[in-house]
Length: 187
Image (cartoon, rainbow, N blue to C red; front, side, top):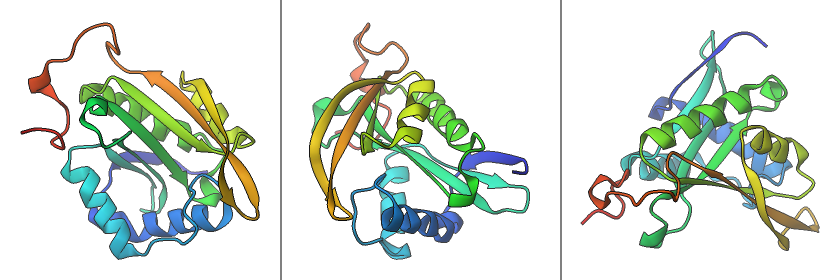
């Protein structure tokens, strides 16, 4: 795999992001969606996250080809969860196994810490999804639970693995409510 760079995603990346996600929906359990969303829907999702100041990044090779993307978003919609984010990392099939997912995840962790988030949660489709579990373990995540037989895709039941990584001061200090990293819960 040639050299690549990580950068903030832009609206111009949406077609490539949509194609990568389409493959993940149709061929894997990383997403529990059954029908891949189109570019218009992926644009809405991108705008919703970036509009709330959540990090959204891509890995791009020297020719401008998007190899993968990652973003952090709200873990849950209730205000008490506002200091926790859920990560998502998706790679083009040709980009898997070259450390790009790790680079994306580690940068996403850095950006989330810089923004002041305190916990990152991974929600992994499939307790047999070893590459994703291993990726998160190597980044310092620990398994906090398995929601057994919680998804049904490709004619079988799928477990959901929850993993967690403390960010920054995590739960050791109280947050300054005025410094909430996003805009979603601000008055």
